Image (spheres, one colour):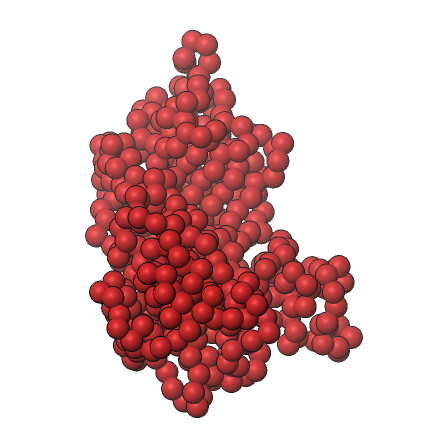
Length: 446
């Protein structure tokens, strides 16, 4: 049964429905309500109508179908111990699965599990030899930080291997509680009615005492507020090897979460990056072939996504639109004074038959403009399987503006908006292209 996440524009002119997982938005304006009328209701009525269709969380957004950092998933579980708040499950934009729950203590895998956890403890874990590569037949709760997932975890959330979203035994997990972090593996499968369980070693590493006074029984777990972040199918398609010890788990976790936990130091000398979603509210740019999406809408989605990622990575940035300069273009570029890079997000248009990515540079480009532009073109062409149209020297107003204040600048035409793609596909590909732009920028400035 699909679950949904709804996004409403600030002026309530459009309501979008995103099915989870997959996060492909659908424009509610194209759907008819139960009375056979087009959905043109404003905020409250639209919310009621959408909730009746099975929609979940609602968020007011600055832009049509603005992609969000994570979306909430419906689930059937309660906390195992502390039910002061309900558990919450999210999928992030890069398909990590986040759980906020309590942290019951699991003694399974310890050679003395039955003694220290009477009635519940057992010497076996779901992850065992030959899959388990570390010491012992099973994963020892007292020495290895691990977490437990419900037996119906993937089925209840609709996660699957084909989309690389299913969480499997041995996958990596980052566990956080009250500012402390420990990295763990998925080593056990638990009951299907509750969520939030970890090994003794995991709880101890988080600074929590799980023992009774005599240290002979496991008697307590962590309260609600533990955050678990899973990387589904951690090793598939990578060179990473499943860790065999607590030290190896920690080392791999620090590597996998490096950009989240400890952002890199970027080699910016000025104010960072000035991002411009091309066109504006009064000049929407080219129109999609199906007339349901404008270039400005796609540009805005892409620019806001980049800004969200810059914020997450600790990269300094600001955003500017031509509406901020009264519709004048050169001042948009001139606002890049003191910045290290100006980037304008666009989508091309011609005759409805052209495809491909290109990057516009000033007529006499600087080395960094050429380097970054070529890298962006190569990455987007590969990711979207479209032609690489390369660099295009252009005497464009925004590029003249940034050149006049000595800031390198590029204008990215991710692909053509006037082809036959539907709206949801166009928006999804705008995000894919944004990730390519992000990769190129971080590689250039790291």
